[in-house]
Image (cartoon, rainbow, N blue to C red; front, side, top):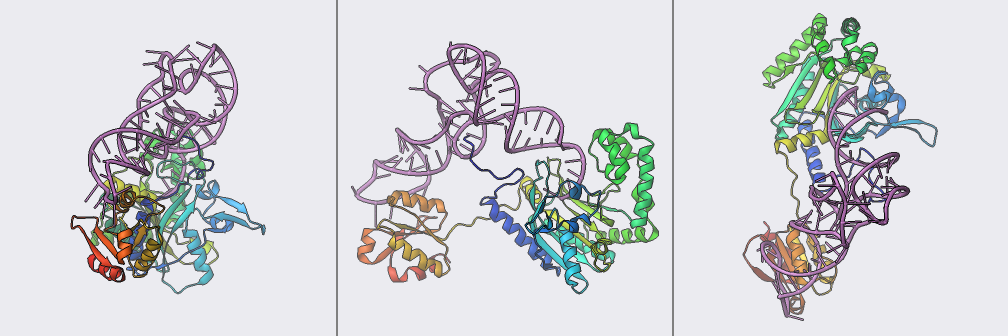
Length: 419
RNA sequence: GUGGCCGUAGCUCAGUUCGGUUAGAGCACCUGGUUGUGGUCCAGGGGGUCGGGGGUUCAAAUCCCCUCGGUCACCCCA
């Protein structure tokens, strides 16, 4: 293939129709689901001061090595957002809305990584964040909202994994226990995991390297290190999920890569994915994040759903196909095009979707274009119509033939025929 | 950042093992068969410096080197 001069940057791609229509439809479904639960849309900027994201934690890879950072012309240190929770919480601190505050968002994020299946440098997420209540039922509302969204798309093979990381003290005690466990057996860990074991032992639990499997299996469980308070919170979450009849699996090794999570964490994976990147959504509680951003200490919980991966899961399950959006009418004009210009304009102003063909093409060619447009009806304007001041209407879907209609009544006739 | 695989028409791919007429097919596109009428059918047509550069050779899509791109996996995450 002759290389085009320019191509989309690595890890990005153009979304052409009909996939573009499908994405828009997905966001539409999402908006319906979350707005039905009282979430309102927040549209944060796509870039922030670098410091906003640094608050997410020094050991978070997303922040440490995957951010698109640059200095703007005013000397400000800016980063394209690698996720949106930080922006939402920053926005919360800036505007101090009344609590509880429930916001949803949709839009692209940017991470400098090597692309692979289901992982891109620019990727869309939809998500919600709820700030204020510490109520375990809020955790469950957030999880349930994601679950209902997947249901609305028609997805059946989604698995919900839940875990509790405990409060910050619990977490610290657990990390130290993990550290001891791994340090005692460093030799049997993979090379990469050895360094991770000292910097961020929790992350080792996420390793996919086969050499690490045994030591991960034998590692102490987070659930044994929960305080009574955290254990109680987690218990409430499990009970409420059960009463909502949302099936879940406890995954004590579910860590997640953003360091701000405490207590409840969860992840949705697709069972039908052949790809390694099988997480289609995830989230959790981040009670310390608002404070870290300089806002009044405010607990929060939320999730992000990956649009690209969710659509891949839909593909794998054969659900949520791209909507077909053909025009209603296609105008064929062999008299030069002025008639088509006027007729399409009139039809469009009356609310009909109308397209036409271009150039001095034969009627055969124009009819072929009409057929391919998917339009239900064709309006034909040739020399004889021009002389008699009429238009010919042809049904393109069935075999009901065609009829002659006065120029002045074309719109009302079409509206009646297309009903 | 590390490793595996792959780059031939707009798309999906033959051809590369063992170098040898003018590089093919299907789909898509255009024109005609049908001087006004689509979808089926038939005929014809346009479109490729075989990702790019260098090398070996009488001769390279085919062999060698470099490079760019894609893809999959690790890391990490959606």
